[in-house]
Image 1: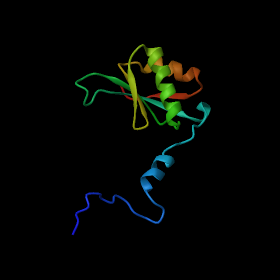
Image 2: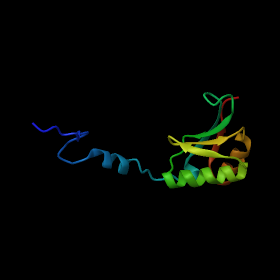
Image 3: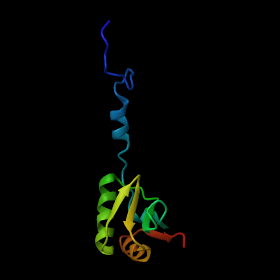
Image 4: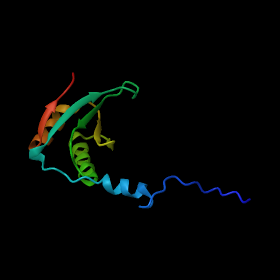
Length: 112
């Protein structure tokens, strides 16, 4: 009996479902006027360093990265896009609120 090292991860009549999940994850962006951006401050798990987080935006991956780039440039700092959130290094919520407001988003600053 020959040992087969290839493992089946998912099997169905439709083929590999992981490919479909990747296609489904592509969301369409809503216009800024229809969205409210929530700005949070977080320092948990970062060695005490603060990040400003933008939550609750419905944007495509490209648009999310583009908005993150604009916010990083305006704040003069680094950041990233993780799990549908934009994280900007440092306490920049007020500056981010100004930028997002000019782009047409409704903005709410949450937390202290």
